[in-house]
Amino acid sequence: MVKLSQSVNTLLLFVLSFGGLYFASPFLIPVILAAVLSMVFIRLCSYFERKGLSRNISALICIFLFVLVVGLIIGLLSIQLGSFADNLDAMEQRLVRMLESLKQWINETIGIKKDTQQKVIDQNTKGKSSSMILSFAMGIVGILVNTILVLVYMFLFLSMRRHIKNFILKLVPRKENEDTSLVIHQAGKVSQKYLSGLAAMIGMLWVMYGIGFSIVGVESAIFFAVLCGLLEIIPFVGNLTGTGLTVLAVVAQGGDAKMIVGVLITYFLVQFIQTYILEPVVVGEQVNINPLFTIMAIVLGELVWGIAGMILAVPLLGMAKIICDSYPELKPYGYLIGPENPGKPNTSMIDYVKKLFAKR
Image (cartoon, rainbow, N blue to C red; front, side):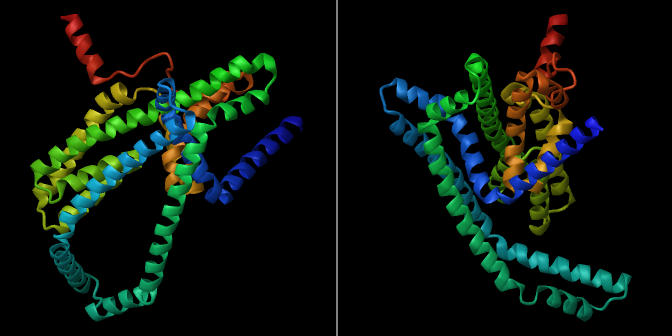
């Protein structure tokens, strides 16, 4: 009975915790996102402080650099989107022709007349245009507000990081301060290395996708290359989404089967290079969690916090694993989240080549 009661209490705590995370998402998402991003800039902020700048000035410089990088990416997308918009009229005409062909096929195969199909479409879309525009406008305003909040939180986290660390140390007994300080350092380091490595890998993916899509002949190839690279922020889901959007754009552009096959070949080649070379070398096992819990964390993150949850799921789970590994009572959970063979490093293509030459 005691074990059953403990299991029920654990399950109840689990449900209440994620229920609280879901309902508090408007407040928590900007805070957690800012906390994770600020960890990336701690080393740079400390560098400026060693050069004699104050902590607040150093934090402001880090925020400025972050905004500059994001602005450059948005500017690049805007330039490419301008060239992409020039082809929208032709793409719209092709989509209309494709829709008419689909209506004709339904009429000949199932027997539903075109007029009946159009009435169904009109009924489903009637009165929704204004609500969609309003929702889009409110979404843009919400993104702007959250962006400002994230920047403010990042500045405060960077400027008050020592105060926050001392608060955490005061929560534990004095004899455990050294171990707790090490856990805080390792958790921050995981986020730093994972996000910085991910940024470097996304830059390499831009180049590879840009070259591949240009060779295939995709219109606005740079735009789709940047889009596919940015979507890699969401593991497993982002690459499929980016490639799917590119294939749909190729179809709307009037591309033939060879072009679609070329896009898919580019995708598989880039994924092969990313999986066996870029991730082991550039990103590495910084998060050190197994694929099962990576996917579960992404799905659960999407259910709780939407897209922001999918982005934050992997680094947060990596930090949770470090905390679990640091306390004996939680070590079984850290073992469950971790890789199946923790002592065995991933074998990349570079390792394979080195072994091949070593044998010779």
